Image (cartoon, rainbow, N blue to C red; front, top):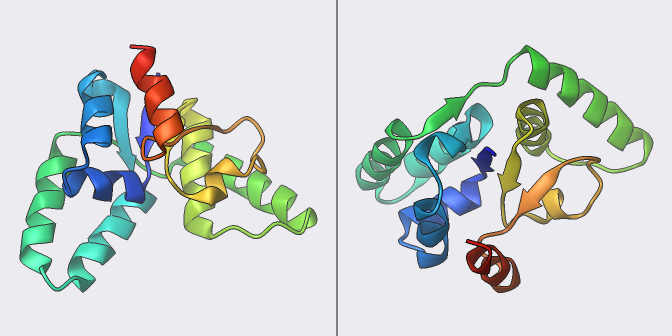
Length: 144
């Protein structure tokens, strides 16, 4: 199973969050991935921060050791379907959240995020975990 990390999960890891570190330690390196929209968000955050150089270095060090998934053809097809379906239902999500969900659906991956946009159940077949939620953390930790 592939775990596709959202920006808030990566930021928690970069800040030393033990819940995320514990979950990452139990997985094989090839089972954890970053995708292009998440890396773009993280790059922006590092460039905008007061500690730009430090944050860029930490981000690049972490990202260089992780599997990377681009926004490809399959994800593009999922994105178009998702955005049209949700818009018809009156549900608005950011394009980056939809792109992350589309990549996850294309890979059959689990999105790891603390973002409500992924946990609200509006994206059919999207698998989601929250390693920053104590209830999810306890359940995931106990199953290993």
